[in-house]
Amino acid sequence: MKNDCLKWYLLFKYMMDERHRLEDEIDKLTEELLETNTGVLAIVQEFEESNESLLRSDEEKNRFLENLKKANKEQLDKIKTQEKALIQADKMASLGQLVAGVAHEINNPTTYIRSNIELLQKYWNIVIGHIDVQGDERIKIVIGDFDEVIKSMYKGTERIMDIVNGLKFFSRQEKVGYSSVDLFDCLEDSLKLIKNEIVRHKITFINSIHKDRYIINGSKQQLEQVFINLILNSIIAIRKQNESHGCIEIKTLLKHHNFVSVIVSDNGCGIKEENLTMIFNPFYTTYLDEGGTGLGLSIVYGIIKEHQGSIDVFSKLNEGTEIIINLPLIEQNL
Image (cartoon, rainbow, N blue to C red; front, side):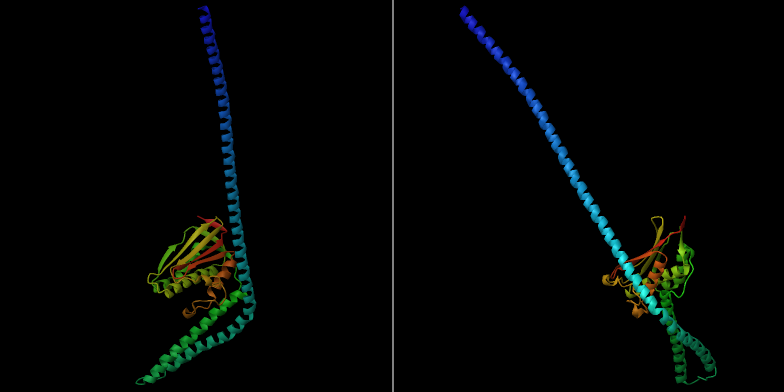
């Protein structure tokens, strides 16, 4: 009996010892598992951080490449703009040399012709005062035709004089002094001179000129010539389009605190894309039937460059044109 009890005791003790051993092993394995799990989590976290770092690196690299491409494009655009400006300046210089003598040669005989036409008109007015036109229809017709002929001759000489004046600008025979010009006053005075043409053609005019005082160093007369030429071009473009709801807008916009933009836009016939590069060329015109000489925009370009400014043209055929002139400010009075 004692032997049986001893056996059961030894068996129970063995089982308890084994249980404690297994529990210790389980605790140890659990601890190792937790340590392993912590290590795995650390590795996963490190991997995620590395992955994020790589993604950030790729994003930064892509951003850098995009910025580089953008800077490259801007630089190329600047170079192209400068090349165009140099080509245009070279054309202007060549034209100046060419017309310096031609303008003088044309101007002299035209002045004589114009003076003689004025004298002829005076003599004719005296003559017709002594002619009895009663009952003679042929004489009435001759007198009427003669008046029209004199008017057309005078108009023709005026047109020649206008062309010569344009040529003189390129040859720099006429120098003008610069002074402080109030852009608001300059634009308002230009509009007064051109107002009748706008009204006559029943064109809607939107005046978005800012009333702030933008002061420019330049020639008020030349700047007025620029704005009048641009508005006249818009009127012709609207007429060519046969636009019954023609509209011209002129507005000013402060740019970077040291430049002011004057924007003239219309809903006229627009300009073909292939012609945009030629519109500032001397004697180039698409308005020949409307009396264009091809000097208007060339003169505009020359005046703006003389004033240290820039001019940009945006146009779509049959939709309209927008011309932006940027001029440097010497003062801004709010």
